[in-house]
Image 1: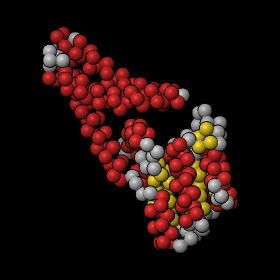
Image 2: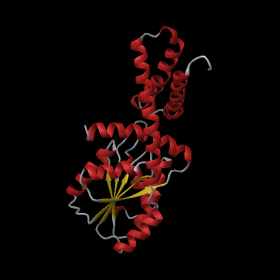
Image 3: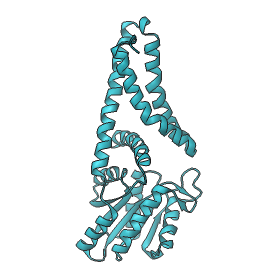
Image 4: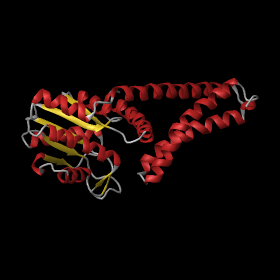
Length: 272
C-alpha cells in the first residue's frame, strides 16, 4: 500500500465504502432470486466501483494525462456517493419514524373513531398468502390503526411480483381478515408494481368507489416512509404517514441501500 500513492489510497477507500454497501446487497438479491433487473443494477455498481480502481492502480505507471483526468472524475464520483449516501441514511433514520402506537393514540384522540379516514397500506414481498417480514410489520401496524380507528377503511395496494404467486393486495387482505378486521372495510388494489402506482391506483380506486376521504394515512416501512411522503406531496395529496418498524439493523441497512437507488430513479422521473 505504501507504494501506490496517496491518490490511489483515496480511490481504494471510496471503492471499499461502495463495495461494503452494494456487495452484500448484490448477494442478497441473488439469494432471494429477484428479477434480472434487480440483480443487474447492484452488479453494475459493484463492477463500476471495483474495476476502475484496480485498473488505475495496476497500470498507474502507464497512465497518460487523459486517464489521470478520468481518475479524478472517478474519485469525485465515489466521494459524491459516499457523502450523499451517508447524509441520506442519516435523514432516513431521523425523519422516517412515526410509530403505530403513538400514531394510533394521536389520530384516535384527534378524530374519534376515524370516520372518513382511509388507511393506505403499501405492499411488499409476499410468499403466496404468507407475508414476508417487512410486509407483516406493515400489516401489524395497519391492524393497530384499524382497531384504534374503527370507523376507518383500508386500501391494501400491491400487484403480483415475480415468484409471489398471488397479488400482494390479496395476501394483505387475507392477513388483516385473519387478524379480525371486517372484510368490508378492506379494498384491495391488486395492480400497482411500484410506489408511484400504489398512490395513483389507490386514488383511482377511491374515485371509482365514490370514496371521499377526510384524511388519508399511508402505512409503510420506516425506510420507505420518506419516499411515500415525497410522492404524496408530488401528487398534491394531503396525507399523514405512519411507519412500520424494520425488524433488525441489517434489514434496515440493506433497505436503505435499495432506497438510495430508488431515489435516483425518483428524481429522474419527477424532477428532470
